Length: 81
Image (cartoon, rainbow, N blue to C red; front, side, top):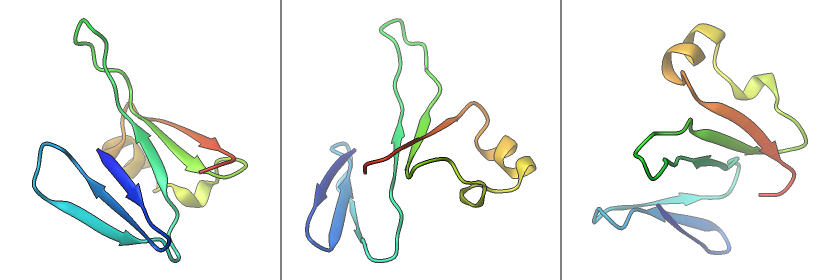
C-alpha cells in the first residue's frame, strides 16, 4: 500500500490494483496497520498503531466483536502520526 499526503487529503493505493481511494483528513483519525511475514512464509500477527498517548477503550468494538473480527491482531500506540 502506498500513501501520498497533501495538505488536506491522503491518497491510498496499492501497486497491484488500478484503483485508489482519496480520503479527507478533516475530522478523521488515521491508524497504521502493519502486516508482514517471514522468509519461510509464516504470517506474523498484524499490528494496528493508533496515534495518541495511550490506547483508549472507545477506539474498540465490544469484546465479542473484537475477538471475532480481529483475532490474532495486536494493538499499540505512537505519540506521533
